[in-house]
Image (cartoon, rainbow, N blue to C red):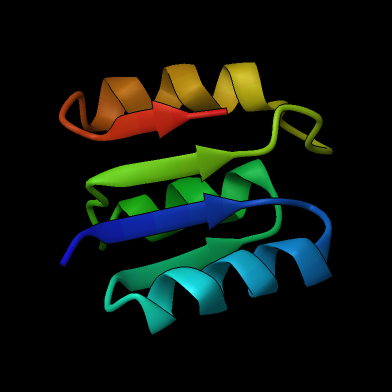
Length: 78
């Protein structure tokens, strides 16, 4: 089992991916913007983060840099 973070501003897509990963037995959290994702990572360190690049407020590139600084062990997928 992997721990996963899904970040997508499209709620339907984010929730669908979260449910699919959870059905495969993974522990999944979902965020719909960059600041929410960073707040989740303060308490939950994912093995994998699946990031939407075109996020509002903080784009996926900036979010990826911040996540890498917080936890270099997390694999980032855009």
